[in-house]
Image 1 (cartoon, rainbow, N blue to C red):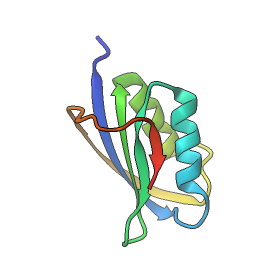
Image 2 (cartoon, rainbow, N blue to C red):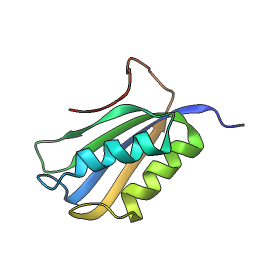
Image 3 (tube, rainbow, N blue to C red):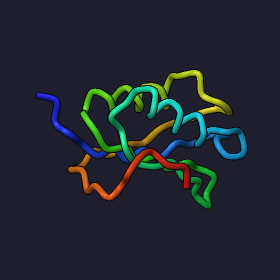
Image 4 (tube, helix red, strand yellow):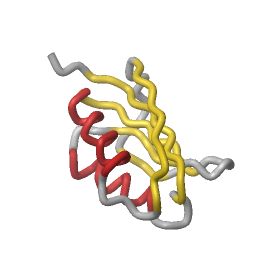
Length: 93
C-alpha cells in the first residue's frame, strides 16, 4: 500500500544562495504527485516539506541525500508524519 505521507527534511551544508530550493522544486515536480515547499532557515539549512505517495517522498529524500544537487549537502534529517494538506503545488518560500 502506498499511502500519502508528509516528509519534513532539514538539509545541512552549503545549500543557500546556490539555487537549491529551485532545484528541489523542479525535482519534486519532476517526480510528480508531490505538494509542499522548500524554504531557507535562519541557521543556513533548507527545510523541505513534501506530501504525497510515500514512494515519491522517498525518491525526493534520496535525491536530497545523494542526488546531483547544487551546493554541498552535508546531511539530511527527516521525520515522517500524516499529511496536513493546505498546499496547491510545490512552492519556494
